[in-house]
Length: 335
Image (tube, rainbow, N blue to C red; front, top):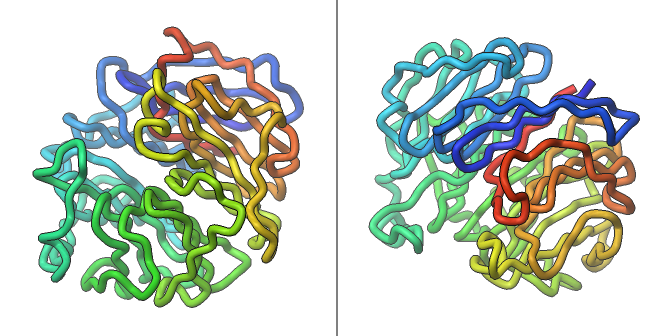
């Protein structure tokens, strides 16, 4: 039975249902009154971690039934991104605003600040446009083949790499994007890294050391969420728009979903059951490891595809407020 965790403004939704049906889903609200910005769930451990803008970190050890506030150094930061190592579920990373990275090796009980990111040469050029006096770590991704390799997306400024779990850093490898929104890797393709960025889509096949921009067929290049097919590293979905306002603001939204297969050009997926176009904010995608299966959330609800985007079903999830005005901030799904 899958469980989806949807981070919204002022609360977290915990949605449980059945793989074989879009009906019969139950919805519980958690962390009401908080400001969730990201969520990550560790399958098999019932551990869920939520980062908020003002209140730091919250953790559940019972699959989202209850949450505790973690009294750590990270609580003074706006937590914008989270990652769990695929090699050891006790190893976690948190990224904040201002741009800092923290590491836990005990499942979130304690955290260590990993110094050095803001000492990189390009840091004076980093800024987040709505709050130009600062910048933040938008995404963290641990390489599935090398537990020490960590990919960090700074919004807005740089792609940053570590080869030793965050003890040292290097920045802006050739071809990498400056405005990385989400990153992904694949357990069946060593060296493959995917990037959805405000300045386009990029892909690496050497562990992030060099990048190629792949835009053929991609009519909207403000990319937000990227996810590969768990069963095929050469099939990729991205959500994108023409700019920030059409991606994130419900009243001016106009976003789309594209799929790329092998070396073919990107193909826009319209009319497949997942709303796109006018009035739709950028989708956030998540997978559970099942080939072809992907979940997507927008201001029109939570959707699931079993054929990697060819068709989508809307899941019967209860949203407490007017759905069309909601801009989801994070999505994690476990089975």
